[in-house]
Each structure stands twice: as C-alpha cells, then as structure tokens.
Length: 547
Image (cartoon, helix red, strand yellow):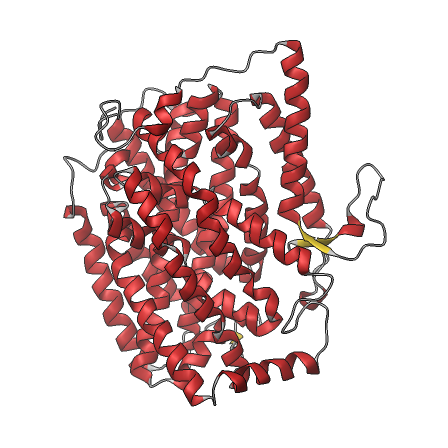
C-alpha cells in the first residue's frame, strides 16, 4: 500500500461510517413484531411503499459494478458498451405485468422466493430445487462483482497490495456489512439505498456537466474517442457497431432484459413492496435510472479524452480496467469530491451485495434447508438459518476475490446470466400459462444449461490468453447441432444466453407435447386464477409473519 490519498480516505470513511450506523439502526425502522421470520428479516415486513421500493430496487439493479464496468466497457470497446442503455429501456415494459402477478400470488400464499412459487405452481420439489440452485449459483459471482467495484475504489485510494494485507480494507467493509445485514435484514439496504442513490445522482450529474466543459465540450470528447478506435481498427470495438456484432448487441440487450428480474435479488425487492400500485409506480419511475446510466456510460469516452491509464493490480500484475472511472475522477476533481464519489461507488457495492446475499439465503433456507434437511423448521429456525447463510454467501464472495483472479469472477457473471435465463419458462411464462409440462420444463432447463455451457466453453479470449469461457458471444458459423452447421460461413455474432434459451424452449415444447399425448400427470397446482390479481387489502392475502 503506497501513495495513500488521505483526503479521499477520510471523506470515504466518514460516509461509510454514516451508512454503518444507519445499517444497525435499520432494525428498528418500520419494525414488525419480530425479525425471527423471513417475512420480516428477508422481506422487510412486505410493507415498503413507492419511494422505499424505488430506492431499494434501483439500488439493487444499478450496482457498483455497473458504475465501473459500463464506462470501462465504453472505454475499451466503444459502442458495444452502450447495450446497457437499450436493455434497461426495454426492461420495464417487459416485466411490468409479470411482476404484478408474481407479487399477488406470492402474497396470497406467503411465497418468499421464486422457487417457492414454482413449488406451489407445479407441486414439484425437483423443479423448485433447480430454480433455487440456479438462483444461488448465478447470484454468487454477482456478489463478487460488487467487491470488484469496491476494490477499484480502494485501489485508486492507494490500497493496492498483493497479499492478504492489501485486502484488509475490503475485509473490514464486509465484516461490517455482514453484521448489520445479520441484525437488520432487508431493512438495512433499503434504508442505506436512500443515501447511496442520492450520492450517485450528485456525482454523475456533476460529472456530466463539469467534465465536458473542462474537456472542451462533447464534440472534443467524441472526437478523442473516435481517434482512439480509428488508430486500432478492430471488428470488436469502435464508435459504431460493425456488421458482425449488431445481432450480438440486440440479443444481448434483450436477453439481459429478460434475465434481470429472474435474479432472486431483483424479485426480493418487488416482493417486499406493499401492493400492486407500488410496483406500477416503480415500473414507470425506474427508467430515471436508465437516464443516469446513459450519462454514466459516457464517462468511458471522457476517460479516453483525458488519457486515463488504468491502475495495475499488484495481485495479478495486469491493468485493472475497472479503475478507469475512479482514475478519471481522481485526475479531474478535487480530493474531497473524489472521496465523495468513491463513497458513492463503495456504498453502491454494499446495498446490492446485502440484498443479493439475503435473496440467496432465502433460497437456501426455504427451498433446500426446509425442503430437504428440516421439513419441520419453525419460522424462527428459518430466519436463523437465513442469517447464517447470508454470512456464508458474503464471505464466500470475499474469498473468491482474494484467492481467485477477479477477471474470473467477471467471466462467471457471464455464465450466471446464461444460467438464470434458463429459469424463464418455469418462473415467468408459468405466471400466464401452465401449458408446459413440469418434466418438459426440467428437460428444457437441462438442454439450455448444457448447450449454453458448451457454447461458452468454446469462446476464446486471446487478449486475456484464455482458450475457453472468454466471452458471451459466439459466431453463427460455430453453432452446431449433432454435426449440422446451418449457418456455415456466417461470421455474425449472437449472445449465447439467447441461443440457449431458444434451445430450452424448443425442448420444453417437444417434451410437453409427448407427455400430454401420453397423459402423464403434470403435478398439483396449488394456485388459482384469482390469486394472480389479489391486491393490498384483499382478504385472501396471507398475514405477514404467520407460519
């Protein structure tokens, strides 16, 4: 650890201390009768209103890694990095109605996780287990990526050691996070999200107004970015999409939009809201974050204009592209404001990491521990198990960052996105129809997972010296089905998750048709059509905190 930036560290620490106090105090905020119930600890009492839900869901979806990775991708690849904007624009109209139905049926039956819902919809513990384990495995690298964002901040402030001592600030931050999440549950990130989002909006708005004026205007910024990409011509980057990556851009944006609210942490924020009207208002208001994201992405081009050089990670010996934005702020703003910005990004890591760990813990507790290990678990025992599981998840993510190359966690996130998409038929489509047979859904999940992993395995990344799992896009000419290559010679790329989902759906349809013709039983549906329309105040809603 050399060249510590003390002004930045002091400002960062003071704001971090503020949210720590808020995290512990949150246990008494909107408190129910007890926190020894998943409704209270894991879903905040299911009574968050419009403002709280807006900050909570926004703080959950727009993470620290988003704030460092999207500009870094723009810095390195140009136009391809802008996929994040259309993806979040089309996201909310797509999920508007399914989320309303998921909230209603979950409140009627007391479901805490998407796997709970699948268990009730199909009466199948096997299908619910697949949904649960997919959610947990896909969420783990997502938590690790929050640490990547936090470490980018710490590295820029001078904490850039290569051993365990170099990770000491990260350990401290996550010990504190673990403690107040253990005590306060979902109320902690919900309360802290107010601070996080306020800081982020101030920082980004200041940056997009101040930096262009300082750097000669947007024309000069775009000219600088164009000059960089023109100097190193490549089909993989540029100010405009090339002929081979336009399909990749479109399918990546659509696939990401379909996947986002399948993640258990995204649904956790929705299930914690108190009514359907809250969700409707949020689906209308959440695109405000997309405006913020568009502004944020352009910081990557600003970094090009200022000649930013990413900091070398002392642990790996390679430049850390995630420090692009943090170095830009350090170079262009006074130390006190840089510390303020770093606190926004750092706190932006804690909020989603807390929600993700709670969501993963809920899945473990309800759909594995209670289903297979202790069927007679009381609500208090469930809550205790979830609290312990949330600790394991957090420190598992920390260990992953410390002992494994952080770049590998980024690659795992690509795999996680492909994985979580395979739950779309069982979770999202089933909200509207039960036409699919449960064994068709299981067969589709297996097919989508298998082909997705095969395709991901075949993708190299020469720049990183990797022969496998080097990205999330594959050339159409590489698609092969039992030796048949229908797109031979076509070099256009496509998002792997989209192809795997199509395979999933095709197999699910074919198996369902066969099983329907043979009259095979399709499980027991414990829900009724009216359950999907229940709203706040409806007598059918299961009381909160009741076993």
